Image (cartoon, rainbow, N blue to C red; front, side):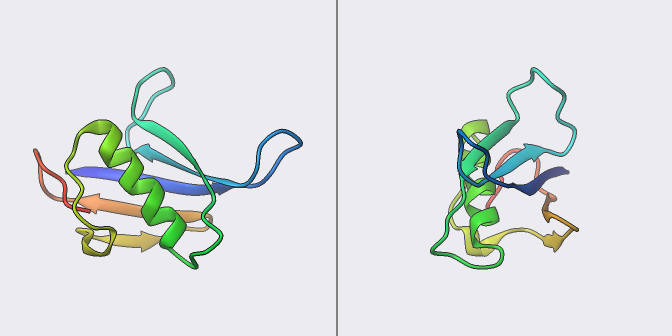
Length: 91
């Protein structure tokens, strides 16, 4: 089973708002993390879906559509995506 955790990061003086997506068991220095600009045209989970898709692309997990995730649940500051598949993850 694989998990992706996303959360919102507010703007700073040098960067705009963004969504960070990371593999559930990510450790500093490993490749399982991405930061994508906040997608203001979407609402609710849309920016988080886009970040999760970007992470799946980076990890080579084979994403087909953000609307077909295996499971998604809300947290205090983002979402958790749970995938029961091992080799190919369909988001």
